[in-house]
Image 1 (cartoon, one colour):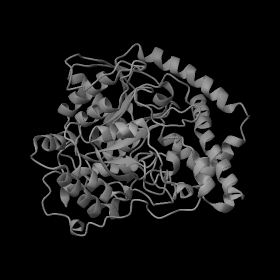
Image 2 (image 1 turned 60 degrees about the vertical axis):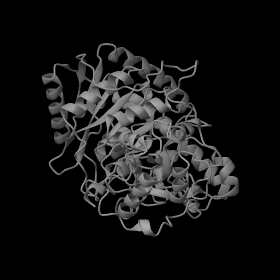
Image 3 (image 1 turned 90 degrees about the vertical axis):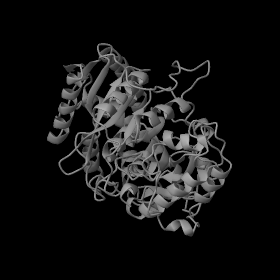
Length: 505
């Protein structure tokens, strides 16, 4: 999940109603039929960039192939909601080969400004919003040579752990189209799992990189809070979100981290640079399967994590059973208060723009409105108290992790739910209960600011992915990535492809 920050008022003064897709649909004609053979679909972003640098393949060839994949699969998956194909093709013809990802096609999550293109935040309220600027983080992606094909699907303002916005429709899991991709970076994770692009931009304010990575069987690392370059021109008070990518290979995410991390003199953490491979160091691994409410993970999720722990132990790592270091009931009350403060502002802005109650205009989804009502029923100092509590949690987690190198736990309490079970139209009290039960391992690391990753190491008996979450002390991304490289060798996932992916077209 991701709580979005933006300058809504400026846009809402001029437009509330939806507009047509700014970038437009593809007009490529001859590209609409997918080629019988696509030699690039199974190559990660690093390998594709190497082809461009060597002159063996042009960026336009890679971009054209990716567009064909999107056109062949998107009607089923609905991962790409604002295509910008003509813009991407034009950029591919002018690409320089010096960037680490020069000429490689990708997607931006639709919570991120990209100058000249619609940023709708998954909401009916923002369908006519065209970004007039973009942040240094988006600049960093383009400066690395990435060619953006368009925007990926996200729940309204990133407020749910599933990607089922009413504005543009649900995103479908390539492993089983009846199931959720997770959220809020569901469109990005689904596009990577489907092979549309090798890597896509994602963000994480409560699990939004790790949740969809787990649901879609791809790799996703949430960096330490403060590691990456500026992510928003107008961050909301208490913003705990970070940005990075989801990918099929560890090296793509490692390189993605290196191009987006701060390297200036005022950087909060020493730059990591490119982490190249596994370490021989054996780690002290904390291990838990209960969530912070004291509820055990579902049987298949629990068994998957126990199997991963056994694999690590066999590889020489020390496994130490632990319990969650915080009181989950207190944690969730404060976390949801901070989470709901954003929807409260959205409702006020929507009502000011339309001059009518938000229920009448229906420009915001029931879940968003429900969060705002829930927040307004709280005392006025609720957010202040939540932010004070966050500092306490940060100290608790710092103390807990000081005893271990990494911490292994589930990403989610269950396997991906069916679409509709956590949709924004589910009655608020029911959806609230389902959300805090399902997403009960990831938000702690957003509050604590600690890095955490979802690694695709397991699949259920029904063929749905089950990610394993590994976290570390603040600034510990290098250790996590080195471990991820080792896990990638111990249990390779590169050749696992979803049934509804370009590998089978």
